[in-house]
Length: 417
Image (tube, rainbow, N blue to C red):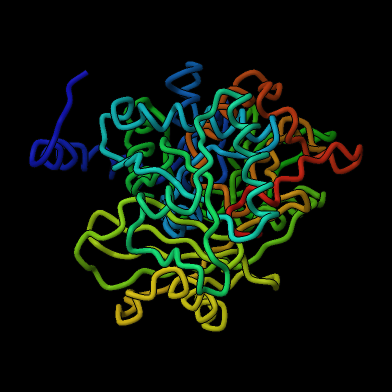
């Protein structure tokens, strides 16, 4: 494989531009695909890429109602980590982490994955007990993690207020050195280019408006531009709209859609070289490679599909960050936005067959979607290729809500869902 950097990468990308346009502007899809992916975000594009690369299924189409990577993939805070508590979650996110570590090389595209470490702060005795429990669970699963005291935190982030005079003093933290950040849109572009090169058809501005279902088995999708397109299997990866899409197939999903707020500051000189998360003051922050402070918190407390953001949530989020970093008080906000995330009652995703044969869903990631992108795409691709759920996906069946086999991962979000 030939590798590119700098202007060579740009020249290489431009040389592929005509080929991309050929696929994305294809006026008519094939009559039949082995697999159709509904949703062209990070998870959907990763699924298409791994179907072609790892499982030899190249007769694949991706239908996206907007533009590729323009939904929640472009509206997150780019954090990558795998320090989840429960075995099922830890195995899935660690699978993703290992793929992240080689992703730029695999895609021959710089996704700007930076393993700068992730701190989850503890402010109370119960916080520290939970941190010790989670780090011990991580180690038992072969995941890196350390428990730091306040001095250890101060050494990593000297600009943070770790004094005893704050409302919630920093008592310590969990530390995952392999965690970090990546560039969200680059991940979508890299997977899109990789899937395109392997023969996958990518359709933008082409909404799926329904399904063809015969005797309880899905046989195709109904698109706004091209009518019905037939398929052997269909995977739906429509973060934020999964409940609506499931309704088109005649069933309900046990999840809700919530706005998720985030913002970035004006660019400033490098000052923060790790990710800091705090559940108690309810905020997290990192600094991008171009200098923006990237700030977020949990989901809004109401259901909705508005991507405009809400200032009451942002105000509380900024207050939390200033409590940790008083020196940021004069930094100006550049822009803010809201993504739409599906959240399940147990704060874990759905990777599942459905009541309709050959129709599969990947959704419900809450605030954990971006960090899971490679792992989610890989195991969902394996499931679609074989028609049976991958072992790492099996615990996340939608039917766990019928049996009560839930995976309560609320505490591992770093900030509450």
